[in-house]
Image 1: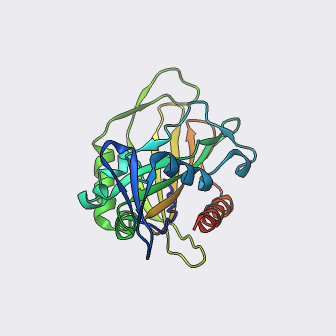
Image 2 (image 1 turned 90 degrees about the vertical axis):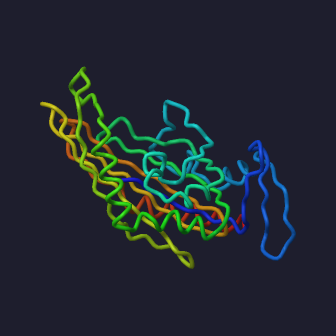
Image 3 (image 1 turned 120 degrees about the vertical axis):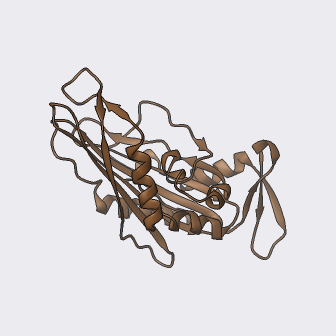
Length: 248
């Protein structure tokens, strides 16, 4: 399942027309204008880098650094309220770091997501902990036909996925932490079953959400999948919080 982490900005963020300037209002101070480049620099100071994940390699395909999607990605954004979606200004992600030489296939990345207010950032993340959100996600997945090329096969086959959303226990000092896991188990032709886990660990500070996203996938007969190591997730989430605290 997906993993999100919310990192905190101690300031409200508003995207100005043209998407090139962000208005940041600090607590007790006058509104300051920062460029998108400065927002990217802030995110880069917090997001994961290669030295944080020894044994993993940067993904072969370059990740799109900036996105209008929220911490859960476009697929899950559809199950958020219109108000929560409207509150997002911009998201800036790290590269995706992957372990491709062994099974299951695992990967991890982080992102800093700027919202129009702290309340909207919390509201976006808290929405996943509801029966309505889970039902919406399951309905969307069942209505979206997919194909997958299973390991050991050269032909893409229909795949019917049955997702299950669950909450993850995650804690950081002095901050509310959100954790969600999306698990999916699907038939993968004669090769066996496809299993995947996507975790999102997040926390909010100010108007920014910082998210850790970790995945673990097995396609076909390559063995049983298991979630991304919880100890590594905790270490990386704590690292993101430390960096966010240093930025203020």
